[in-house]
Image (tube, rainbow, N blue to C red; front, top):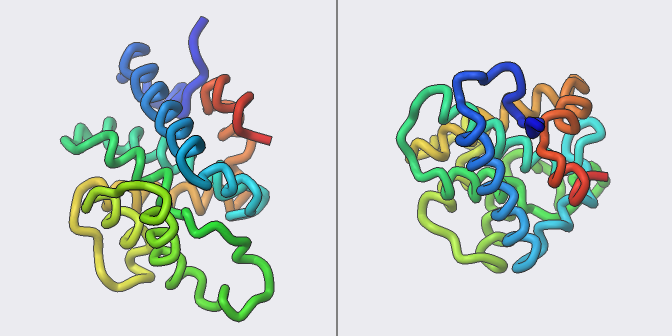
Length: 184
């Protein structure tokens, strides 16, 4: 039985073994983040459309791996995955009318990094991913390959979510274990 994946029909060049390897890495990192911090709280907040921040972050992690593998980019895959999962770790509902949520697009990368640093030990590259994922809205560009890929993956996922093209796909492409364990 073949595991449903984020790549589905679009990425047949990656073998089943490689796909399962990345699914396992992402799943294990999600479990690690849930056990050691407030990561699961992100499921309580909506990001775009009807997609939670949790679902968005997992989608960005899968999209980031898909981009990196499709382009054959050499990078630190665990840094890529971890940075993608934590890039929106701001832990509030930015849709609520609140003065502190003003300019969310500009401010949330720093809040996400502050929260992530409180809960987890981060590498320099993971910090760069979190801080720079909103480029070009935030004017300082990413400085590592992993951050550039997450920045691009975030934009792709945000567009799909805003246009309501992702909910069904996220549920279809995420591995069964993730779907059952974490998604509403």
